[in-house]
Image 1 (cartoon, rainbow, N blue to C red):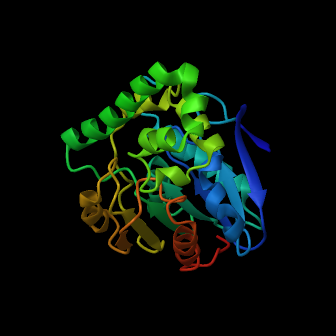
Image 2 (cartoon, rainbow, N blue to C red; image 1 turned 90 degrees about the vertical axis):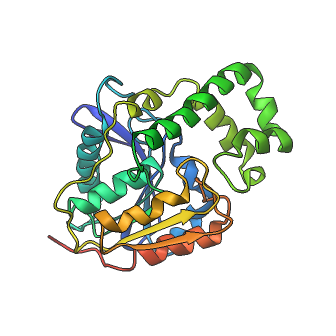
Length: 274
């Protein structure tokens, strides 16, 4: 399904019934990042998964030469208005870059609640942001080298494990199709370059009435767990927990646990009509 926003379209899928919960993936991923948890969530929520601009079936980024974060937030706010039912404020959840967007939407008071899994935006300095970008750029260079044989590599349990170890605590659990999509996506995704122009920040003052939940995997090598204590400096109302056995993209590491975190986070406030 696609939705038209100012001449652009954001691809999205709606499943289930109940309070609306919009799931926002991280950089170089797409809607499929949530496949392992979406069926359980859809038993309790009206779940909307979306491809961010420059990802999946959504339009490409207009440029990678300026900080696209604020632009994407505005696009997401428009998107939320269109997929909401009855004037509700939906719940949102996101991972990595998607976690940053979920929290920024909470800071702006645009959502009923926000749940973030290892969110971006809490670097301990420019060196920390540079380190994270270097991870993606190194993986992109490697992916370009193996591009011709990427499908074969991802069909191998060993190949899939080695190639995805930085993102997942249990990379062998990642489905072959999803791992192949990610390996091919990272070679051309311009969001990696755009992220180099980003200045992570949140709207001030933060709307402290919006419930915020942050879950951080202790085996996150992209955005290490040492960033987690910074969350409450910006979001004093946040419930922050760290979890052993979860990596940067935790959905396939422990689907039952992640689904429970998302359901709990999106039940801390009910959708309200402005």
